[in-house]
Length: 529
Image (cartoon, rainbow, N blue to C red; front, top):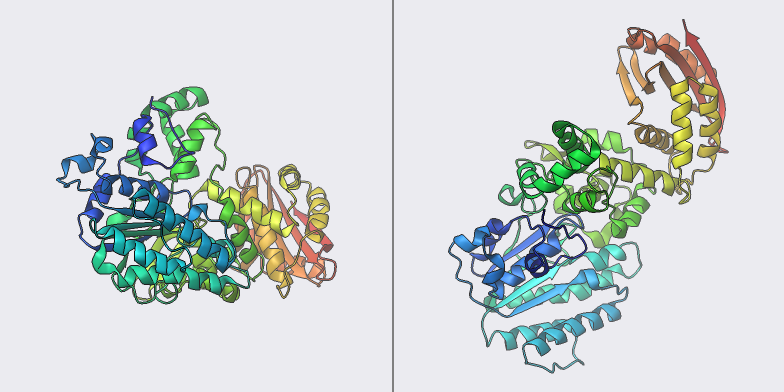
């Protein structure tokens, strides 16, 4: 079996070290064959963007020996070398315009030194230095510009007071690309968030956004075929070590790590880092949530807990494509009251993915990609609501109580848990309560079945829970008596749909939630014969 490397995104390292490399060079051949083309590509972090940029750099440096046996080697590329300017903002930790400008100048000076055309005048601004560098390099040949993680500085500081000044500093760099287009052989820019037609890339009309192009829908991530062909030996070993049937083993891997769709028409793909870590850290038998976008996690959680966003309802309603097209990470503070823009953020950061599209209305319908993301998102959302404290023990205890039919124990754990919730300023208590309960239930999904807003002929149940021996029909009210909730369950005959659950005890549960102290104020239960 070839080795797996997840800690390094260098194409040359992978090829020289004989590590697994899933061949994506046919896509890259399509890109690099276009003279003077400028491409933008957005994908979640740790999804192969940096490896793609590294591979493009190797192509334009003419390192054909690294591509022996790969698709591009047989496609007639000329392998001519070009001067390359590669800027990787993944390495930039600056948070002020001055710091960012200085960091950019240092990177540009490194490129100039590598090509023997320095020193540059470091008293100039970074955009002036960039323009000068391109002019000097173009005397050798047309210049290739590769920019990785263009938006990282902005997402790191999205809620800071100086984010617009940081954006202006970056805009100067992209203005140079726009004005020096005649001197450029190829431009490739990556990021997590799509570029807005205003803002940083304003006026770059020849920058083509390939992010939603079906022709490049599987350029990053692994298709099912790529997984089974490239990781065949690891899969065989994993089947043996996990003691599972091969079909069941592959189905479980798919449920946990597949499911990302970046265009409506394209095949779903696996998260490449998750697969690599599953077979290395997890030894091919530990189905954990390996992909955690730690850099964007805090940002996503801050947004998710500061607006009244019912994720289930928002997914059901879909997201306007216009919200995605006009998304600007530098204006994130102004998006807190806009569920469409929050969905756009969750889509681009990988916490949601495309399910289908209503072309007439230009609405994208989204879903959670897979079990790994659902587990990670819900667990950390609960931790954020609970002041950063881990909640695994409480979730496990509540699940055990429900399976045992012990409603009192469930409420005894739920009440102090809810009273410890941190409520964002201005947030609706009803929405936060419903969101937290729904998230708790999703955390238990491997051991029981729960449905939020469960439809019946009489209306919608706030929550239904089905275990192997018990059924719970739960209605909750805020600042009203539990008897009001229980009366609603009876009058609307919510339990009727569960009477065919033979051998199971049906619990009708009304819960009154206090907006004053955030705890369970009262609860009542009726057990049906």
